[in-house]
Structures are given as structure tokens and as C-alpha cells.
Amino acid sequence: MTFTKTSQKFGQWADSRANTVFGLGFSSEQQLTKFAEKFQEVKEAARLARDKSQEKTETSSNHSQESGCETPSSTQASSVNGTDDEKASHASPADTHLKSENDKLKIALTQSAANVKKWEIELQTLRESNARLTTALQESVASVEQWKKQFSICRDENDRLRSKIEQLEEQCSEINREKEKNTQLQSRIEELESELREKETELKDLRKQSEIIPQLMSECEYVSEKLEAAERDNQNLEDKVRSLKTDIEESKYRQRHLKGELKSFLEVLDGKIDDLHDFRRGLSKLGTDN
Image 1 (cartoon, rainbow, N blue to C red):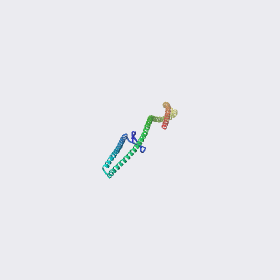
Image 2: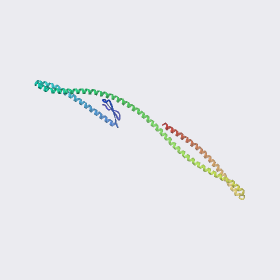
Image 3: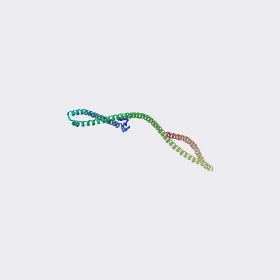
Image 4: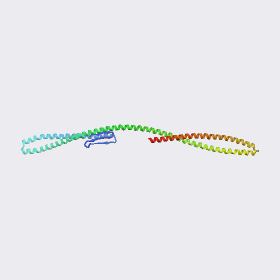
């Protein structure tokens, strides 16, 4: 079996007997490296043990052959020097031992041949699994490159969206400043309206005061002895009337001027409100598109 690192934290190996590929994932690359080293150590130890077992098998077969060669000479010597009974007593244990040794050798040779075939099958399976793992590794490398490209595209898109969000935040801050300006303008409009109402109240008071003048003039006609005083009063009242008329004209001019300013300000305010509505619709459309 061959352990293959398919990534920084994942490794695979194949079991040819079960026709299965196993895989392990690790939390770090150091653990994967340690496991691969230990895997290689165990594999080397198994190979050494297998070689030692083969050497022992060959040694035992050599010993059995040597004992088989020595046994006939001993039997010949016994047959020359001894009787027929002695021949039978000395020959039968040696033959039995040789037969058992030969049977063991045959079994060992059969097992070794079977093991060779099995190892050849395992080697072929390992080659096939190695080819599959190489193909899988190439596919994984291609997929990694594809993921890198997609990640780069997503990162560029993220940067673009961040810049757009910053632009929208700047626009929102501008909208807030415009709202503050509109609030200030509304407060100013309310102040101007209150001043206009005060001016209208003063104008009504002046009109009421101007209604008293004819009554004073009619009283002056009946009061001749107070003519001079009435003339002075009349002069004073005329002066007041002229000043009141002047004040009325000025107040009317101020009122017209204030109305014009108020009208222009309302037009500007309507334009700003329309711009805000258009900008809000654009924001809502942009949010829907996103």
C-alpha cells in the first residue's frame, strides 16, 4: 500500500484485496506529515518482516535438503554394518522426517507461489489506484485553479460593492445635511409668518386709528374757540396720517417683499423636496436591483 498526500490536510491509500480507496483528513499539515512518516515506517517494518520470513523459509529448505542428503549415507552405513532389523529400526524415522520436511517445503513453495500471485495482483491494483489518484489529484488541482479564479472575481465584486456602499453613505450624509437645511428654512418661514401676522395686526390698529380722524375734524368745526388748538391738533393728526400712510406703504411693500421671498423660498423648497423624492426613488430602485 502507498500513502499519497492529495492536499495539505488529506491523504489516501488503496486496499487491493478489498478493491477500496481509503482517505483520512487531518486538522493540520504537521499531523498529516507525521501520519505519512509513521505509515512509511510500518510499511518498511512489514517488508523487513516479510523478507525475514522468506529467508527463514529458504534456510529451512536448505537444512531439509542437507539432512536428506546425509540420511542415505547413514542408512547405507547401517546396512553394511548392521542386520536387517537394525536397518528397519534406523531407516523408518529418517524417512518419516524427510517426508515431513518435504511436505513442509511443498506447502511453503505453494504458499510462496500463491503469495507471489497475490502480490502481483496487489501491485497491479496499486498501480491502477495510483493512476486513479493521479487523475483525481489533477482534477483537484484544476478545480482549485477554478476556485481561485472565482474567488478573485468575487473579491473584485466585493470591492466594487464596497465602493458603491461608500458612495451611497456619502449621498445619505448629503441628504441628512439637506434635511437639516430644510428644517432651518422651515423654522425661518415660521418666524417670517409670525412677523407678517404682527405687521397685519399693526396695520389693523393703524386703520382703526385712521377712522377716528373724521370724528375729530367734525368736532373741530363745532368748537371754534378751540380752533387754534384744533388746527394744531389737526396738523399733528395730518402729520400722523402721513406718517401712518408712509408706514402703511412701507408695511405693504415689506409685505409684498416678504410674500415674494416666501414664494421664492417655497419654490426652492418644492424643488428640493422633488429632488429628495427623486433621490429616494433612485435609492429604492438601486436597493431593488442589488
